[in-house]
Length: 90
Image (cartoon, rainbow, N blue to C red; front, side, top):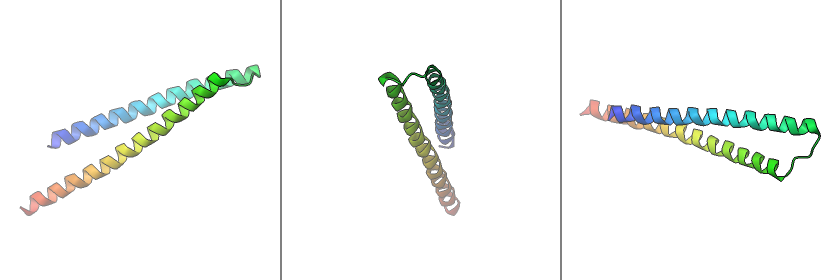
């Protein structure tokens, strides 16, 4: 049981770190594209707006995943503690 908890928490941590890293990379790329467009003085077209909307959607999803991962982690810790207390009373 303890090994499964460690494995699942490791998986959640790896996914969370990968998501944060991916978000940082996408944000940097989008920032560079915006700067290039602004430097040219061209109004952003529908393609740039669509990319910006996608980026915002990805960031929103990442925030939800972070919240799920952290909430689940605290719930899991509470469940483990309850099992330990139950085991000690038996």
